[in-house]
Image 1 (cartoon, rainbow, N blue to C red):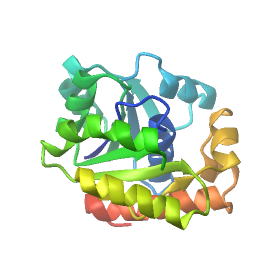
Image 2 (image 1 turned 90 degrees about the vertical axis):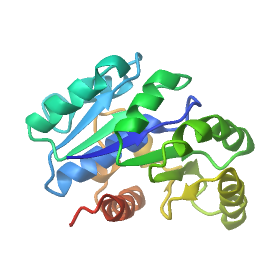
Image 3 (image 1 turned 60 degrees about the vertical axis):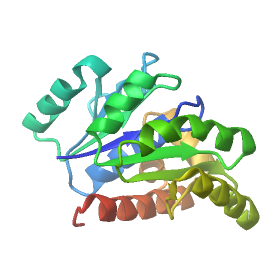
Image 4 (image 1 turned 180 degrees about the vertical axis):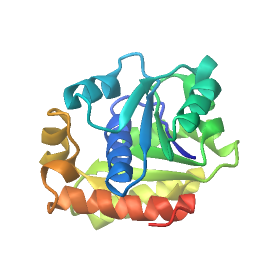
Length: 209
């Protein structure tokens, strides 16, 4: 079983949106995926409720019991677990990062957001796990913006994911309806971004498509 942790100490970074799109992409590729929702607000669990019985399964989790929850997911046949963590929660973020094969840090390409990932840097980089900043909810076009953001993140010590999820209405419209963008508009630009992200992530996880 492969495990991906989505962490960021900043609220509104897009952690849940990233997590649910990855988990849905895994299911669409034939894998059995599960999301662990460590956020007390339960946003991912709410999304799962809107989907009714459609996979991926979303399970509430806590830092203190995370290893046991992951063992249960593996025993239930999960191929991929995506851990969605809350902001400003060091214990949950550290537990998720320690359990992960790959750590993803969503970040908007803006000054305040880039400053905030410095807080996450110490936690993620100290573990020596493959860790990537993935730019999220930025403009569809903006070469200079992304280049400058990548320069800042690189100076902090992060690797940059070569794929980003931009600000597209499909992400918002789909999730509020209990779906993912690639389910609502399979041929849309948002779906293409998710597809490219999934192919890249599989290469990092050594998963054959």
